[in-house]
Length: 78
Image 1 (spheres, helix red, strand yellow):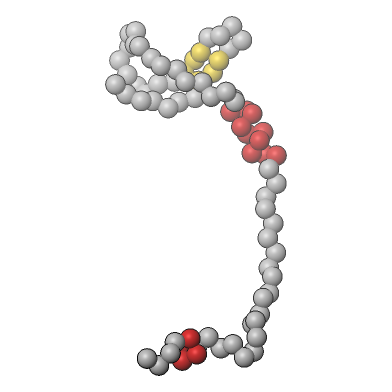
Image 2 (cartoon, helix red, strand yellow; image 1 turned 90 degrees about the horizontal axis):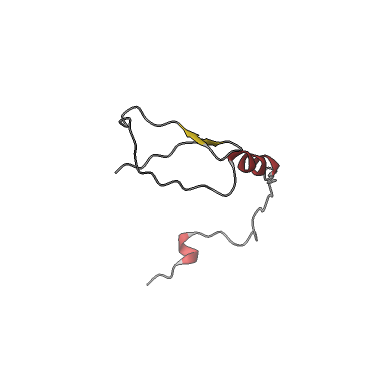
């Protein structure tokens, strides 16, 4: 058994056309078809509608000049 992910074309009369790898022997095969409810065109439209996120720089600076975060200030001598 092989799993093949490919793009298929569905016509108005319900026929499907798909391209398979050449290593599949010709003849009748039992297949399972899983159809995504949204077409590739609908997915592409959704991607195009999304505006990119914009982040601006926000300078935070030091919280306080008295805070140095030196090792001696953070840990006790013991």
